[in-house]
Length: 491
Ligand SMILES: NC(=O)C[C@H](N)C(=O)O
Image (tube, rainbow, N blue to C red; front, side, top):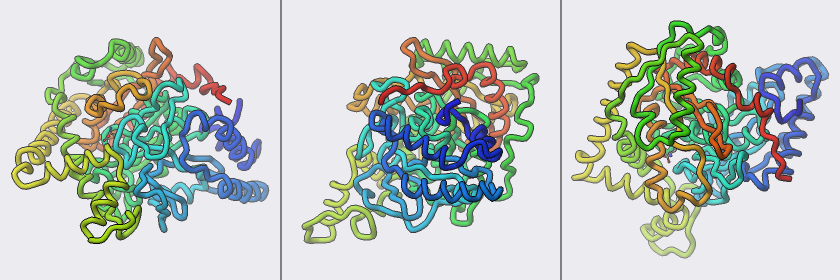
């Protein structure tokens, strides 16, 4: 097996048994990145020099039998809105083109302590606003399955890099689907954990009540393993929940008899492509053949979630992004005379179109007279959706549905119509509005050979149940096992 096809688990075993050296792993993946990432565009910054140095230091520890840390020598990619000490963190924005954090995000501290090797920072939609990575200030990313297609977004670089075999795992962030949707488009596994499971300290804030960091991997086991390692509260993120159990791998292999799965009819109804619907119905049969029961249910307010999300997320963004004012840090406009002119010019030049659109929408929504009519109503809807979904969990273990209404579309196909892209988030948003955990795993390929993703949503802090069901499903259908990772020949 080639190094780029190996999972985190396999790489770990081979390094621990001294079959391969960390520098061989890291070197092989940089070779692949150098040969193929020009066509894919998944990395904004490749950390070759530092990573090679670190890998060689790990080689020496390996020689001395001191292979400590649960990710000893395992390469990783990081979305470019997660702060990495002394390494550029741009959020794919002109505003932060030169921004180098002086501290590591909590998740980075944990992964560095685990002895993982940071291969580089990955492309994304600017400030995580978008669903195709076409809103990056720097460049587009392409889908490794089909270079005409978008990789999804906003964590498009992270998902594409895992699918292309550049890294065995990446971290993304998910506000309205940004880990799960690109995972679905790129045929990989992506988890949006329960809100509060993972510390957000050091994640550049977009919409603080919705944002969560989550792992993107090639299989379920790896995903559970990485989530175990990045979970945990931090005193600098008051919304991260202390005292929770973060063990997922233990007992993940239980059979599914007795498990009850709900399939909301709204998730496979209007607006969902036939191919996607068929794939999910087939998946439901697979779950039944594994001993679970699947029943059709209803989440009646599903049709309002997109509006509620874009009102709430934009409101929070308008407040969070106020800090980029051309004075404290980030881009500074030249040749301005007054303070007000400086603010205006900096923000007009530093932010891209979609970010400005959301700041304007959010500011409008929060202004006197509109607050009650829009913001408060959106928050009420959030409560209604949570009640409807919580209600289901009193009877069912998991909620099943597609991750996205369609497989990946072509670059440029929707970029002129953001509203079309907003609508596509209908299936991923419920988990963010309610704070519930949700995982996307591949469930098939479309007729044109593009991956289709299946989503499993769980009750708060029920990630283990999700992983259990996903693992059993993956034993029946594993895109990467079937195809032996993507054979990228774009050199
Ligand atoms: N950030 C996300 O989770 C993606 C979502 N499509 C948005 O643009 O808000």
